Image (cartoon, rainbow, N blue to C red; front, side, top):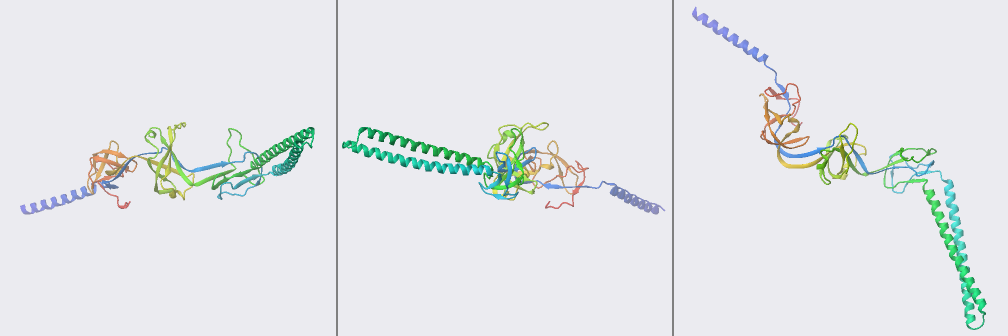
Length: 387
């Protein structure tokens, strides 16, 4: 009887143990999936970046308009055309000015002919005076005749000089007429691409009134040279110097960064209502050929490198919580919060001096719900090692 009781007690104890185990197993909290990165050695940079989106700009861009108003007579280019220096872009109706040029040219020809005639007469008069002077020396000509001939020669020479002066006046009048004619023609000041044309043949264009900007007749862009201009917060700007290395990133080329150098730091602060005060910083592509497929106007960001270390223990910056704390991850173990000491830092990597060792893993998905110190965690199966 006692043996049966003992056996029954053992069976009950076993059942209770199994039940408790099942309750404990099913009642335990499911582990949270996290993304973790290994602590390793690599390059770390201290950088500053723009506060608002910058802009990809052309080194040369001109909004061109005729200096006078008039009706468009010729428009030999269209948007997207490549043009050369001095190529005609637009011509206003100019038949009257063309006629003025022809008239001034004809008057110049007539003035030159008259000057030639006057000078030939002057040369003849001079030779006649010289002939009479020789005759007088031999006693064969009266002194009065010689003086008259000499005066006549000087008068004719003065007429020749006056005729040449008239020729110069007519030449100047022709130059003025040509300049007036040239003002009706809009020409390319440099090689480039026509970005925009505002106007059609037959329409009238007028110069912009003073202080009132109007769209240019032709927008010409030289895309062989591009740079990025971006606003940097006034607090960071004093650290930046011309010649510093930088990186360029563009939304249009999402997974690429381009090496650059600082070309200019604006000598003034921009003050914009309801926005932080900034300083415009311009950077050039270190390898200009990389910008060949880019278009002016793209949004762009810059990151200026202030300091750099080639070989430092580093972790992703996104893994750091407030107060320089991180969560250390071990598969199937509780997350451990740890205090660290940091050095150089940018948006991608942060240098670690103390608190972590190479090979340890830190959680980078710290924004996920439930992630915290002492929480069980497993690696997110949806994220591959390559990611």
